[in-house]
Image (tube, rainbow, N blue to C red):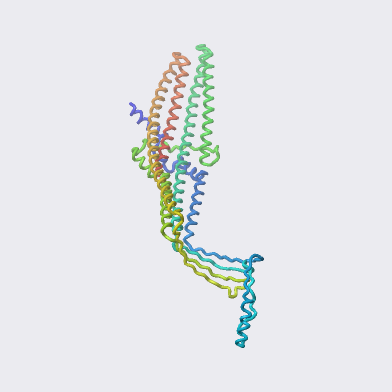
Length: 457
């Protein structure tokens, strides 16, 4: 009997149930999801983060190219230390003696003593500098690390997209549930108004006393209070849904009628297949995997720094001298350099160990994450199964409550039942209908939760 009820329920409640997959492309709900992904502020922030990391990658790539700089300097100096050397006093007498001995003026005798400021005055160095790293482990591995970090940031954005998709779907289903609740309350209000009119006729015909009218009106006023709360919940649900889409909080929300075309099995695949798919699809795993790859590259970087020297070439060309005359001031310098740190107090060994420790930490975290994802899928899978079972139970409850209400309603109209009995079965019917509405929404939410943890592309 339970099996038959479940099959009938899947057919009759197809507007409220769906496969353990995202809504089909092109549906109104999927359109809202795409609108939310385009407008959501948190996702825009992730987009800026990706652009920032992409610029870091561009900067890392730029280090592979030669650097050319124009570096003119001009110095003015006054005071300070001087270089004093009596070269004139030493050489002039000797040169004069040589000139007398040779009978010729072959040697100068007016050499000035040196009295020069150490800080050059009216001195310029106008040059173009070229630098190019032939082989540099920092540049090469830093580029790889930045590339892996960019991939990790892109994976993080997809994680946020998955969470936003789940949030929008859940908020939409909650809004549908508030509309369904108001519809149920409207039907109950019609029933109570009809009861009030019937009681007024009974009192007018002296078949009953006046308290049945006041009791019916009291029940109607209690229902009006519940309707007011339900309307408040509807407006709150609408505002939250619009907030997720980053639009006006009071904007109208269209009802997605295409949900009725979606079939309703709990899940096409078994639990082990869903768990494996989740580990493959979840972007948290991809994000952590890229971080792990970056730390592994950092290990290679530090090992290369400890064993391989850096090789570079460079050069300067320009003018240098006192006064900006550029006459007889041209010069050029070419350089070929090698840098190899032979000993730095075991700093490099420590950096290698530190990078390896970070790698081990991320590997452990990745294993833990995979187990957490499997647990999440298991919980979501059985939550959805339990929600479906609960919905079956509420369907049976609504059917029984409807049948009981029809019997008691007929008895009351024929004077064979008391008002208190009628109100009890009416409240039971209302409660059963509301429970069924909540169970329907719970199935949709649990299905969306399973979609979220599986993260099917």
